[in-house]
Image 1 (spheres, rainbow, N blue to C red):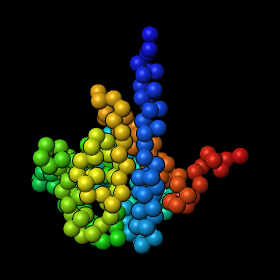
Image 2 (cartoon, rainbow, N blue to C red):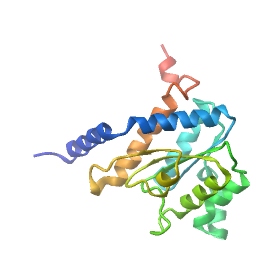
Image 3 (cartoon, rainbow, N blue to C red):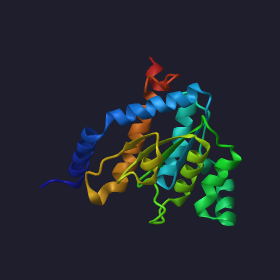
Length: 199
């Protein structure tokens, strides 16, 4: 009898086989262009993806020499904005204060990519609308059909659906795999990771 662990890992193997490496390379090239042009990188995510955002900010700064930020890293400002202004605008107003501009990049981590009509992750949708308005570059690592992120992104990695009842854990798990690939990519990585340099 097949165990759940084997089933989950078999799904993960299938997901890896179906990942579009060309889209990952396009995100790497796009991010390299943002950095080369002196742009900043703003990483946005909600829930588990907010955790990814904070971790990724660390790696993009330390390993790839990006000026990078995530609005979820400042819990005081985030909760003040949610409390006073509302959830839907908490990221976009943070980006306005950060003076998001042409040459900057936004990287979205999201299971569904945002969908205004379904009222899901509208804070991401509003942020992406601002990015398009100011001609900032948009990148995403998303699941399902990619949502609004995939519609407007300059480059986007779509995590394939291999099990409809495990879209969220697979998307969030493989978002981490993909952005760790990106910070290790020779087009982006500038500094060595510690354990690889210990002899």
